[in-house]
Image (tube, rainbow, N blue to C red; front, side, top):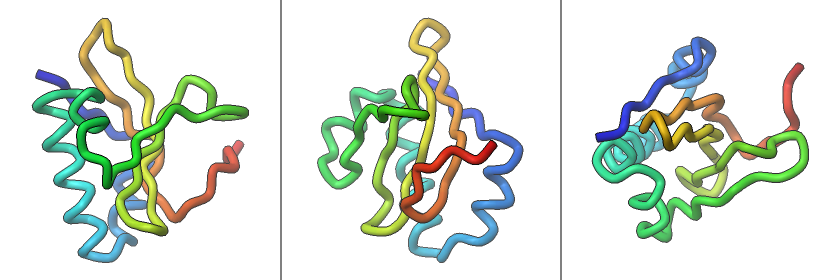
Length: 94
């Protein structure tokens, strides 16, 4: 069983999401909790992929054509930390 942790800023981001995207996010969390990243790879609609550049070590999943989840996996601890849920923008905020 995997645990999904959300960065403290994710709660604010979730409040601004359309309801349809929020439903997809909840489904995404269900898949992760049950089967981890391997389960995400089986569902092609999430288009789960490793990121490069400033986001090396993070992964991205698609909620719809516009919105993405950026997260990091700690496989040895079986937890996933959600860093950002927002419109497609991979520029790291400093």
